[in-house]
Amino acid sequence: MPLSRVVAVSLAALSFGFFALAASAVRAQQAGDLVGDPERGKIVFRSIGYCVNCHGWPGDGKTGVLLQAPAAPNLRETGLDTAALIEVIGCGIPGTPMPYHDRAAYREGRCYGMDLSDFAPDSEPVRGKTFSDRDVANVVAYLQTDVIGRGEPTFAECADFFENPDARACNSLK
Ligand code: HEC
Image (cartoon, rainbow, N blue to C red; front, side):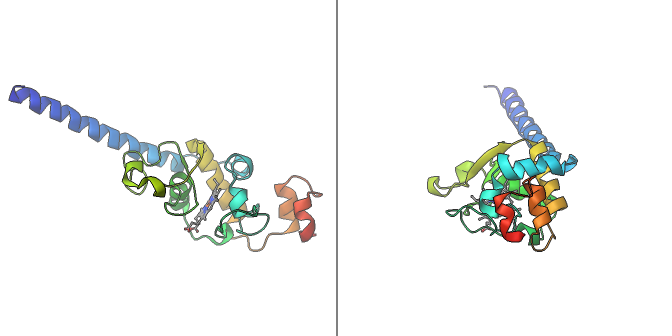
């Protein structure tokens, strides 16, 4: 290859890399730019992402968690801000049972600067259901509206969560 072509090809590769990076940076901001809907986020928390299995319906890490679920932290007491919540939900927490949900997680360094190929096969981050950026924004809005800073779960909250005051899960709070 003549030198000028080599230069042109590598410049093209470089600018492709640059645009790919710029594009992922733009994508990375999207969930944060969307205004989340807490009501829809509740559905993500309850029945799309099954966050309840490990974090419990109130997010406290104990109430109504699945018997075989790993111990999960109390989200009512989390100190994470919006950006950190988006990152943890999108990227999960490698080396723990907290799954990732972003469809582009661990590509192009999008999660903690790492790709799936950086992990040994038996230590790859756990994959959850795939969320759209809107799902992520919605579940973050739900956490910020109805979970974080809420103290101990109440009967009213439970009845509201299950949309049914007679839900069995709420009996112990009556
Ligand atoms: C399979 C169990 C499991 C599921 C399902 C799960 N998580 Fe987690 N989550 C964990 C565990 C375990 C941790 C703590 C990991 C660690 O740092 O050791 C965690 C950590 C978190 C944190 C960080 C809290 C903090 O203060 O550091 C957030 C936020 C979170 N989860 C939200 C969610 C949301 C939202 C969903 C549903 C989309 C979800 N999790 C689904 C197990 C789970």
